[in-house]
Length: 420
Image 1 (cartoon, rainbow, N blue to C red):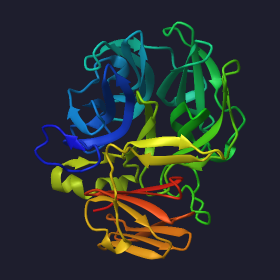
Image 2 (image 1 turned 120 degrees about the horizontal axis):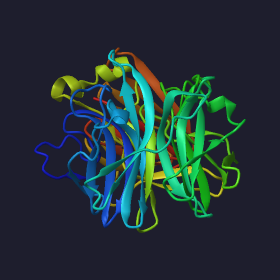
Image 3 (image 1 turned 135 degrees about the vertical axis):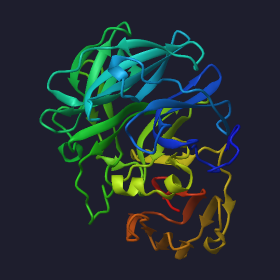
Image 4 (image 1 turned 30 degrees about the vertical axis):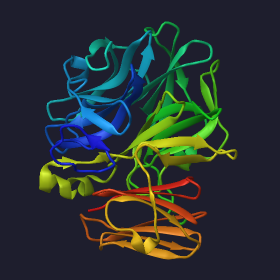
C-alpha cells in the first residue's frame, strides 16, 4: 500500500494518520470511479476530545491519496465533533450520515444529533442539518447511523443506542422519500440478552452471498475467560439472520460470534466493490485509556492507531463469516515458520507445531489445533494471551511495522494485534 505524498511510510499495508488520533472507519463507499475511506480523526491531539472526518481516496485499493477533511464541526448540533456514520449513493450524489456531538463547558458529552450532508464529487460536502429529534427513552448515546434501501424501495436507518434502562439496543428508522424518517423501534426486540451490554455501537446490516449479516460492537460484556470470548475492553461480532421490512425487526439464525479474536479490532464498516466483493475495514485501536495513552507512537511521533487491512467477506454454507485480505494488497510468500522475519505477508502450510517470536513483545504458537497469541502489554510489561482453536494447517500472517494480522481455519478465524 502506498499513501501519496507521505515522506515517511509508517506502515506498509495499513492506513494511518499523519498526526493525532485515528478512530473508526466511516462512510466506506465506491463513488464515481474511486474508493472512499473516511475516518474519525483528531488532528489536534492523541485523544478523543475532538473529531472530524479524515479522508482517503483510491482508484485501485493499493495507492491511496490523503485529501482534505470531508467534514468538520461547524453547526450547533455537531460543535464538539463529527462522529461515526455511513455513506449512500442516490441519484448520482453521495450522501453521508453522521452523528454530531455536543459537549458542555467542562468537556462532557451532553447530546448527540443525527445529521446528513451531500456531495456531487465525493470531496466537497454541503451539510443538510439534523434529520429528526432525539428519540424518547434513550440517553444521549444514540449514534453511528447506517442507511440502506430495502426491497420495498423504502430507506432504512439503524443506529447504535443506549436506552434509559442501560440495556444496549439498535433502533430503526424508515423513510419513503429519503428526507422524512419514522421511528420504528428496536431492531432486535426481546432477543440477544447475553450480548447487549449497556450500549451497542456501529451497527451494520449487510447482504452478501445471499445472506443477511448484522454486525455490531457491544460495550459492557463480561469476559468469558474459560471459552476465550469477549476478553477485550469492547468487542465486535456478527449474526446471520433475516430483516423483515414490514416489522423492521431482525431475526437472528445463528449465535453471536466475534469478528476478530485478537487484541484490537472494533467498529468495522463495509463497502460493495464494483466487482461484487464485500470489503471491510476495522479500527485497530480499541484499548483501555491507560493502554492507549502509552502507545509508543504518541511519544515518538505524535500519532496513534491504524485501520485494519481491507478484508473480503464471505459466508460459508454453515453461516460462518470468513475474512481474507484483498488480493491486490497481499501476495504472501510461502515459508516455514522459522523463516518469518520482518514486514511482509507469509503463508505457513504445515501440520507441525511451531512458535514464532517477534522479539519479547509478541509470540505466536501453534499446538495441534490451538493457536495462542501472547503479547507484552507496553503500559504494564505484563503478558496477556488470546487463544483460538480450529484447523491451523494453513496460516496467513501479515506483519506490518507495528501491527500483525493472522488468518487461519480456512479464513474463519482472524486475530489482530498492535505490537511495538
